[in-house]
Image (cartoon, rainbow, N blue to C red):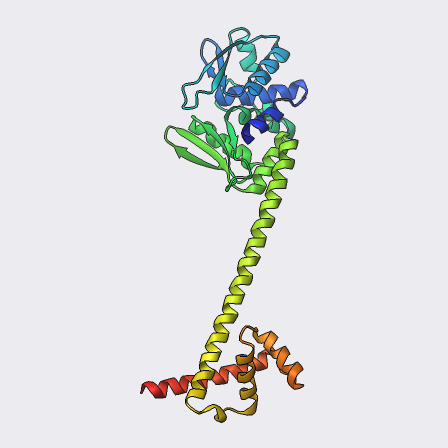
Length: 305
């Protein structure tokens, strides 16, 4: 079962009061139903189909006709088609679906707005399993005006959603992991939130560990490169019989660099301090090697002239 199906299965089992049911059913029908001489709702999810059937039966004492058939998509999933022919005017009016946007009473408070969004997600939403390489939640819709309405509604909750026009449809999507977790929480998918956040925290921790490891490796690479360049300078000075021109402190730095080629400047300064009894800081050692480097550069310049 996909993560989307798991989330929808959980949402389809929520126990809510009648006014909440009305807002949720409004989101379901408003975002996906075909309305002509009947109200036709089609879904691939049997839990969602049962949810819709129960909502309509509980609120209006109407039993929708249910037809099950194989879909025409490539994986031939079962399609559940619910058809309502009685009390249509009452249903559409009480669900605030006389206009392109829902009536104000459907979204009268925060709880009703969340229920409406839950209904839209049940019919049009999908969400990637957080174990995959990217975080993604989307709603696929076929109406431009309604897509931007939904986008604005989501962003009333600071979810940073965006709209993308794709072929003849519109995708309202959320990419940020934290915002997707917020959406699951606000529509009532408590179990899914726990799973989602556990995986997200694990992935974030793993990514942080990888970044730290990469940073550490980069530091090691820089230390080795610096040490190799310093040893090359030292060897150049010795090959030209000019080593004695360095002062005593610089010669000591050279000897310890050759002796401890893998040590960082900080480590090397501590080693020299311990073994010679003369304190030298990392900064002081840096300045000594800087003088050695400049001396080696003069030798190279002279040799090229």
